[in-house]
Image 1: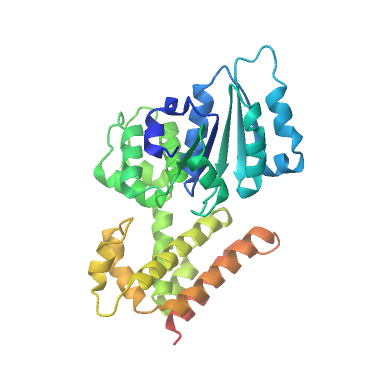
Image 2: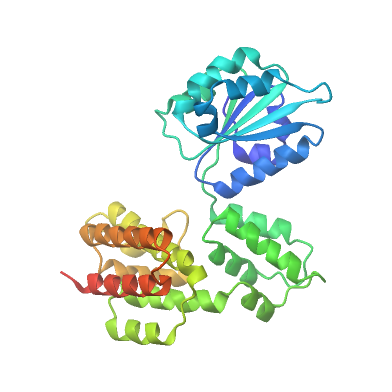
Length: 332
């Protein structure tokens, strides 16, 4: 049985008649929210968290956990993370042992041909919930709902939060927690909020990113010299560059000969913020499919260096990447 995630956000009781439930997709924030709600909705149940790797290494582990129930347990729920097709045979094998135990399986993106996904879509007593990326509309609903009792929540502030989140539910939830902890009196003030969310810092990096991808060497060098890059934000810088390059790639793949770029960009989903449109149109004149592929290879190599080498300065890795992207923008 396939369920829409928004229905479960409203009512998890829809899963009451299912013993094995699969959540899959790229929306990490949504999966974390649903997992927390499942725990909250079952306060009297004992719960156990496992990784697929643990279950595969010891096939009896899951069966023992199902069979060896304490007399004092009303119910038991089991979470299995990082699942893929490799665990399917074990899940089929344990089906006969499951009575009043629920097993929640969490996976990353699963293709249509995935055996695990097909099994949960077609098998009785199994449920599957795709967790797709959020849109600007869903992120806006989260912000407005969670901050509805706060004074000073303007349309401008909501749009700022949407932009800061990059349509990432996990990130927007973290930013909302910051707001809740900071504005105890439930009155949001813009200057304090901008400082809290590092909006000025983010805007500064956006300027460097745009000038580099436009191939403006003089402006890029000037901004690099004036900007202080924080090591702890290196992944943020990298993600910001990646998101823009991937967006250029998406538009380039959709582009047809003679088609108006402004019209094409207006129809992209999730929508591109209005202030970014002219910048992206300008950048598309500099980048083609081959150059974009090389740029994505550069960001991938930078990510490997940042995550695997502790002796290298992360700020220098980011600066070198920006310089190389700027040079690539001007290459033939």
